[in-house]
Structure formats: structure tokens, C-alpha cells
Length: 385
Image (tube, rainbow, N blue to C red; front, side, top):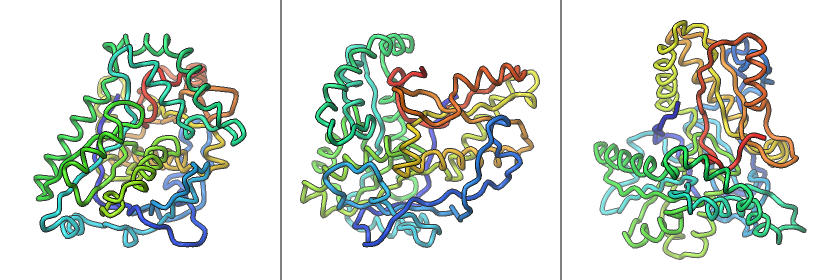
């Protein structure tokens, strides 16, 4: 069950200099209903320290170091109230975008092969990214040879997957449709804008989108990664690339721009996901007995524990919010969260999707509603071992 979602204009992030001093990711609040947020009813979720997540925003640093840092906490500062966000309301947005300014919105996405011939070079681009496969500094010269090896080995199975859905990824068409819908919605709100699509690993590449933005003379830009939850390996990688492009271009350096780093907690998104689940449950003969199975793409555990990636915390809070919305509608089904797609010998976020499905069957679960809850890697890039 897939869905596209809308992000509000609140909690926008300014890409500017980070002030001196320690920085950190915002902490996840304690679950609102700890009795229910034992997400899997099998795998307990350890509550984190409490804090207010309303109106969270992150200030990004366009003065990042030229070398990719494994710890993005050097580049982000978290805020805990909407009053500290760069933009806090639709009226603020209109005040910012006035006069003869040319407004642009850049949608960042991962990209995907459009034909079977694109699969291997697409996989090479993916695995050549040091934010996807992190090698020790001493072995970074092996990044591209390793990416070439992995892409060649994985291409045959990936091609089978893409062949089964028509011979290519639909991501570009879906993202283009989102861009057009966003352009129309902004126009209706008296914020006429041009909306651009920049993919990280396939056409149209982010660099291509930036060239078009410059050609069109855009003077103010909103950057919106289409990943609901932030991760080093998705939004982080795209923003790092964008930073390197901006740093080398005087036109871009002088252009006012803001970033929305994540939007998993936005009301429109939460309600849209809850509505999708509510509608799908109606297709079961006994809806109240269905286990809601949230499946998210995984990341290496070290990303979370060592590099401070907020992905796991944001994912858990996102599901908490969706289940709260469902409870308001009288839906109290049990739910579980598991992570799919892992590669290599390192430990990834647990529980794993394939193992959890087996466990649920052993515990007598007869009905399962699968809900993909994150958008990270495309079909066939990484598969569960």
C-alpha cells in the first residue's frame, strides 16, 4: 500500500551557517501511549527521553566540510518549538515570496532505472555514494571499484524485479506527477512557483535540476526531500551533494533558500496514511483482527548508534502518530514495525522483516496488512538476505 503525501509549510529549515558550539539531533519524545507503542506486541520499543517535537526544524550548514562526515550532527542543529522555525505559517510563506521574486521548489528523490539497461549503471551510482557504503578512510580509494563489483553482481536479480513491474522504475513518473500537483496547489495559494525534480542516482540528476533553476532565474528556492523521515543515507546524502554544488557557484550562494529536512510528523501526511490503512482494513472479512505491519527500509545500526542518524527515532514516532490517528477513528488493531533490505556482515536495524513475518505466523497471526512506511531504496537495490 503506497501513498504520496503532502508536507506543510511549517517547520521549514534555512540552509545557512551553523553557529559555533555543539549541535545535536532533536530527541524523540516518550511514546504518548506506551502500552500501545510496543509496536510489534512482540518486540518492545525502548522509550527515549521526553521532549517536545512539535514544530521541529533543523538548521542546515552550507559551510559543511568538503569531506563527507560520518556524523551529520556536525551539520544540523535541532529546535524544539515552532517559534524557532524559519517559517511557521502560510502567511509567513507569502510574506517571504513577494514582489518580483522568482520562486522555485526543488523536490529531491532517489531516482530509479527507467529501462533494464539502466539498472547496472544506476546501481553503480547508488553504491558509489559514500553515504550508502561507508568505508574507512584508508580504503576509500576502493569505493568505485567496490560499487562496480556490487552493481555487476546485483544487476541480474534487480533486472528481474524491474522486469516484473514493467521494465523500469515508475519513480520518475510519480515524482513528476507530485511536482505538477504541488505547482498547482501553490498557485491556488497565491504562491506561483516552478517545481523541479532532482534525483540522486539517475536522471534527472540534481545537477541537471540546478542548471534549469539557474537558467530560469530563480531567486528564492525551497528544497524538499521526498523522504518523510530523515536519514544520513537519503536526505543527508542529497543535501550533502546540494551543498557541494552551492559552494562552487556564486549564483547559488547568493540565492535565498530553505530546506524541509523531514515531514513525517505533519498532520496531512499522518491523516493520509491513516486513511489509506482505514480503507484497506475494510477489505478484510474481520478487520479488527488484522495485524498492521509497518515495513521500513533499514540502515546499518552504526548509522544510528555512532553517527547519530535520527531515522529510527523518527520512524517510531511516525508510526506512533499514525496509530494515534487511527485510535481517534476507533481503530485499535495491533501493529508491528520491522526493517527490510540489508547487505553485508554488519548489523542493521532490527527486527528484520523476513524474520518478523515468520514469528507472527508462529504466534497465530492470520491476517496481515503490509504498510510500506519509508521511501529509501528502489526495487532491487538491496534485498533482504
